[in-house]
Amino acid sequence: MDTSTDHLLLFDIDFDSLKGEVIFKGPEKVALAKIPVSWIGQRPVAKGIIRAADKSVDDRDRLGRIDR
Image (cartoon, rainbow, N blue to C red):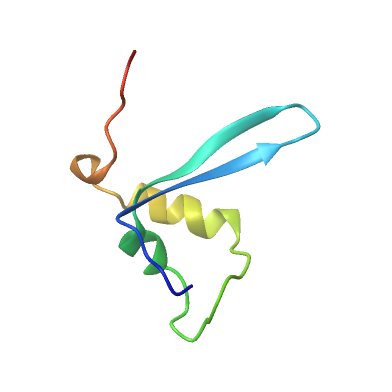
């Protein structure tokens, strides 16, 4: 991609059951560290790779929750 962001929220959505789960919540740089540098543009990434990246995110680097 030509643009970047500070944080990513990535979801695993089951459209049949109408349920979803956050599988990554953290800095973009952590998620991209698990992706081969040679990739250009958008590509699918295995959920296991994203879940592993999420486990490496320090709690201080996660987006905070906003309760209303």
